[in-house]
Length: 187
Image 1 (cartoon, rainbow, N blue to C red):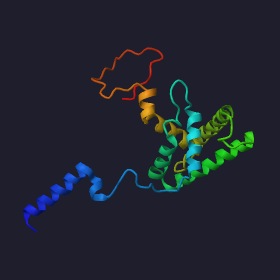
Image 2 (cartoon, rainbow, N blue to C red):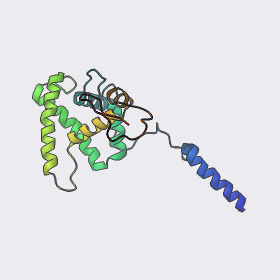
Image 3 (cartoon, rainbow, N blue to C red):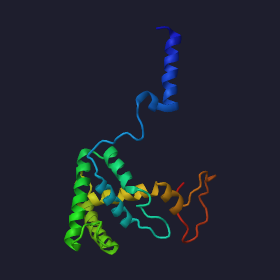
Image 4 (cartoon, rainbow, N blue to C red):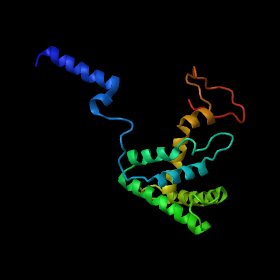
């Protein structure tokens, strides 16, 4: 192989990484995710849980941001198999707890019943997290709550309609005036 051909190949390969690595590797954002499969019912369930944690008020809630799909991708792409199993079992455990307390599934329960249940489970999750040993997985509700918050506040709706957002905020001002009730900054 001549030196010029090698340089052309390197330029082509490194340029391809900057221009569109998907052309060379075949990776697309729409490719299927790995991990344990979520059913459409699971995703709707997660939307309802997230919407109970972050309900619509004067601003849209977590369901409007499509947090259920976000949670699916995060669990399947970032959680290890043990945490994935804990998360999936948590969906069933949360639904069973709701049936035990209210006689209804989580999605059929009233918003007040859902909120009361999640407050109870959140307290149990905090106690579990406080006493868990090194290497043990997190409580399933801690994972659900964290992913709900992350998914919502990094979504377009959360960043632009709930938080203050400026695409180019300008210079850093560590002494920017804050008035009680102002929205937090997304950027």
